[in-house]
Image 1: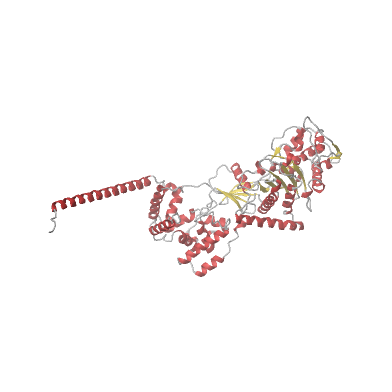
Image 2: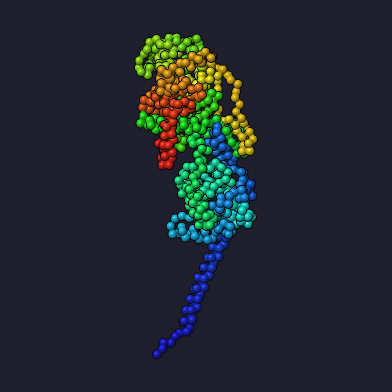
Length: 628
């Protein structure tokens, strides 16, 4: 017998179920409405807090200052480096196409946001469980670069989309792409395709080859990593990726792709001055003294000799590396010509480790390179280089100095005392002089640091600047005339308007000619027969060694017929070296540097060394390993 269904009860249950479903449906719709209101409210908030777009478009940037070597090559650019505005019509078609193919293939078809690209990137990121692929369009990147900060946040992303939609409505695709090409960051402080083309390839963007265009497009992913100067191998592999994508998209032919891949990179290294950052920093700090206000990009033409600078760096770094076992870790070199122009300046062996410029900022004990001031003062007061002085023990209270070899030599000529760098003879000579006169001699020759009036003054116990000591010896080298070191030759705008030009001062004689002749002979004899024999050249050379107590500082300062050069080695923490004297390592460094400046057959003898140093340096760059 069939069971009787209670229709009344079943109806109640159905109504109850329907009521529950309606409640849930109502709840879902309510939540969706509130979510919609919240999202809309947040978007509206993002809209209200957008930056002033008109202000951002007209906003000026910090002017750049490019420091230029004597030969016209760039040393370093401070500030953001932009070039003049370029337009699509001025570029080969493959330049913007390479960027579109690698960055935003559907650029001409989307409305500022690429839905397909966004979905594809989302799937890839989910599969790889990490952020592996981005989906920002070129329009979005313009929005971010022009109006927003790089800070990652939901608010910035929403504002980026809002501005992208505004850009798409306000400008044509060609205008947006032009904005992008002129403002995109391409590494090393360089913004825009034109500035990047100049920096990396030494040419205008209108002259870029297909390979170079692909390289710059490839750099957009990671400008520092794919820099063709710093990492040519990585830049090459990334350029091949771009070329393959261009081929796949039909932008280039197989033949064009194959030719481009085999194309060698333009030798951009000759347009760059490796190192010299201490010099560039020094020059940049001086620009304000000549130009009160910087409201435009500047070029600062300097006295730096690119070839000499690089060789001085290589030689110094190689020497320090070779003597690490002797507890020497740093050094500095200053090279001046006879006008006072700074032709090379190495402020330390590793700028990345320390931006402190040893050559111009450090105060180091000078040791025996100070002694010429004593002998010049004596010559000015009537002594001759053949006059005799006693080299005998000296004791003043607890101070009992000695000669380097612990010996005494009795009566010696001034000439011999300086050749052998005798401490005792120099002290005994100073008793016949007023030490204030010695200080005045050092001052007028260029020493600017504090010098104390005490018996140890004549042995170089006071600290001096390396560049000051080079300047002091320059006044001997150029016949007794004072000179002032300078690095800036000219300052001008990118339009060629000259704002400053160095003008040579009237020559001022500070040393008597006869005195200069005598001290020059004495210092030439130091190199020929004395403590400076390791600095001897096949042509004229004169100079003086210097070593301080406990081997904390070692110097050689001297000159040839063309240059004055000061070399110092030591440790930043003032710790002792292992028997490094001015007569060995600094004299050897000085000789190698000076030989590179001579047009003699002897120059060839050290050329392989310089080439080896350069080769080793390049190898270390590839390995990303530095010994200093």
